[in-house]
Length: 343
View 1 (cartoon, rainbow, N blue to C red):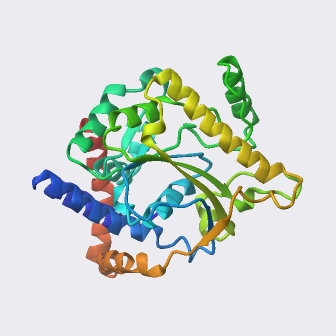
View 2 (spheres, rainbow, N blue to C red):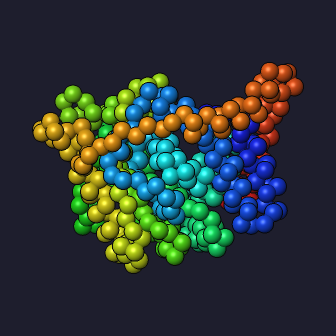
View 3 (cartoon, rainbow, N blue to C red):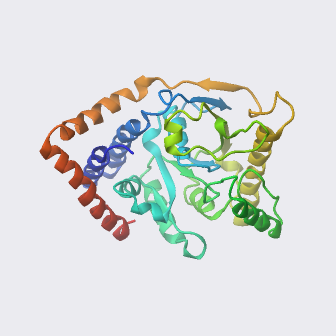
């Protein structure tokens, strides 16, 4: 986890910036977020020793999008950032998050301030609050790269009961049973797309495989934890990318549910081939031509130096170290209060 200074600095400047013009406010927010997240991502590709192989063409221009992906581990968040930075849209990335994550020290506040949406499951899901937050951003013309993991929780091949429960639900609802992904939940995705439909250009349908999860006997292993990912235990990440124009997505909830499940059927088929195919030309890869994507360190080094310059002086003095600790403690307490009063 990065130091608290970049996040505290971002949050403080957000509060000050809120008093300025609204449109210039989101521009400043995007810049601050890019700086902070460049620093967070600087330790990843390529210095993490992990290569990224992309199947499909990522648009070169920035777009307003909803990003839908399968979910396996905390590194999935970094994958979204890795793709966004290739469109110079890192500052536009926002997340739909489990409500419990708002209690993360400092970062719970950070995600909320940058347009993240905290949601609860099932009957506790606050549809009105989500619509309100997304509508307020679209009215301002805020650039949008909204990341959603429709499965709602991480897929782990060792959690057999969770997988069987998900499959039983699909069968009960008359939907195709899935093996390598969980049954997607449609509510957050549907609300996001419909609330912002006139603001969006597309949906990015992304499927991710961490190569270390492919065993020698076609047995799938759990995705790497963040420490394992950072310690180079994942040599390669395969990313299948497909752009879906927002006009192709049905607005009615009953048809959207089918559409979303069909997208996950496609993911499941690709993952089944990746893990289980007996054809050596198909196993361990996605369909199509994969391109190794190298991220130049020049994209993250300036932000790393800038924010590192803010942090290091504090760690080199006794008073700075005290401020460091107080930032964590008091910043966290204020953040918890803020997120619960104004989520």
